[in-house]
Amino acid sequence: MAERAFQIARATIDDVDRILPLFEAYRRFYQRPPDLEASRRFLLERLARGDAALFLAFDGDDAIGFAQLYPTYTSVDVGRIWLFNDLYVAERARRRGVARALLERSIEHARDSGAVRLQLETGLDNASARALYESGGWVRITGCFYDFWLTR
Image (cartoon, rainbow, N blue to C red):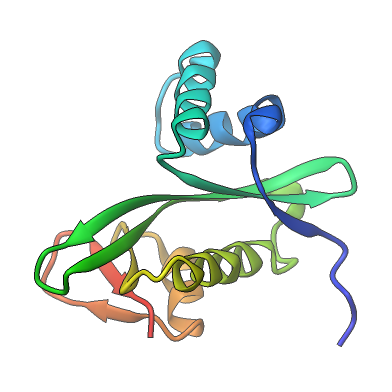
């Protein structure tokens, strides 16, 4: 198998300005108005407090995608859950396996941290995301307004 031309790394506070254009594009996708300062503060706070795991895809020095997870817990299964909350790949880097690599790195992180599961949700109309999750073996929980998915 050929080595991929991009790398995945866990983001730090030093990466915020590299993440920011991607984060703002992600917010635009969800029809939110641009707000660089609010986005910067939000990302800095998540990373400084350690209350999110943020993975960044790089092609050389170019940041091309990110995934952000938030920890939560389950009383029923008495353990940690990671919520796979955000996934975005720059248009110029799509169809190169970046989203899949970010998702796989997120699964690895959840397992390494001892989580009982990793879960996500996506809109019923987000066909490309749904196809990605289905192809990765995720299981859909039906009967919800959103698609909820659990890792295998």
